[in-house]
Length: 502
Ligand code: SIN
Image 1: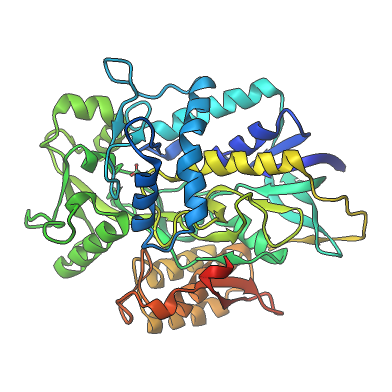
Image 2 (image 1 turned 135 degrees about the horizontal axis):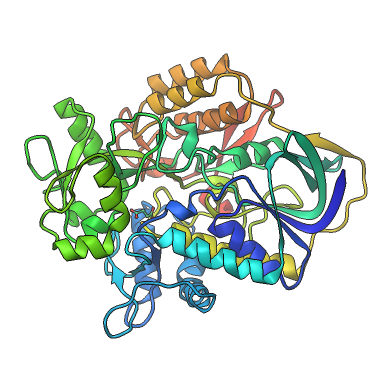
């Protein structure tokens, strides 16, 4: 069966919903979803510099956290357009937390020079943003469909002209003038992640197969404080950075402050710095977790601000008001992704990407806390504006299907990536990972894992969340971006891209 629309948006997290909402009045849109992605799980909030705060300070914090590897113009779009997008969200009915005088409550997280993070339900911001966007979209009458996108339809001249969706065992072709990937990151390509299990890089594998290139895939961010539940695989509950923003501190097994003397912002250093310090502490002490001590935070603040974290801790019999919380880093966010321009266009005509799946350069080598919901709001609107102004030309040529197929041994792929491309990497272990992956075919997860491995192998320096113990310093000679594309045998391979070419 074949249907036709103007635009298919794949993914119903904040980026997909924002894109579909922005297009609802002008285009025939279909929103495809295979789950709600990571948005409902986001805790901390949305960064927005307004009032006495200056978007330029937000710009600077973003660039510093990103190891000065950010795209300056795109960060400017992010910080300048952000407050307006938050205001629209409020107009759509999002209920952010407010102070007694009615002003928005704003908190601090790692890497921010001032409190600028608006939040909802204490630590349930993602769920509230998601709720408000979903209801706003329902009001527009945009059609939605559940199902897994198993392939793209590509004209023989290279344009993407449709998608293949699997529902109840049937595959439906939907023709479209534009396809927008809003499929999130690669969380489940690792054994343990803060992302739900459906988030595993499917959009990245599809884009590569269609001929798009990826960039900055070596910059995989690990959240310093996932709750240590004892599980080593699957989605782990997050302990938001905002807990540290309210005064909690990280302690080693002997009760010593981990971040003392390591960074001027101590426990509120950018998250790559904190995650590395925790990893080094665990390695030194031979432990699989450290402790987050929030017992100095007033109990009423904990109950009001962190109901989600409180409940997650209670599930492992920890009372965070009076007891220390066991935490360890876990995969959290992909800073790179499908290479796009500022309006979401990839290298492939008709194919767009937005949100975590996309690499616009706003995160540089390490994303600043609470810039991800913001990215979805801002760039979702930008893609919608671009596709409202112009749709790609109709391509009536012959077509073929593009599909990354299935993986033979997904658990093995996850363990390889976890073991060799975690917080700490080196050339020898990355080579070992490449050898082990060689036997595991070209399915989507294998393609994603290889993309991370080849990019991490190619970048022979350390910056942001890419830490090579054999090249521990940032080196100006490595100021290029690493681009990943498929070779003639469908294997990810790399080339360098000068920053001025981005
Ligand atoms: C957090 O609340 O710590 C996570 C928010 C984010 O990833 O920006």
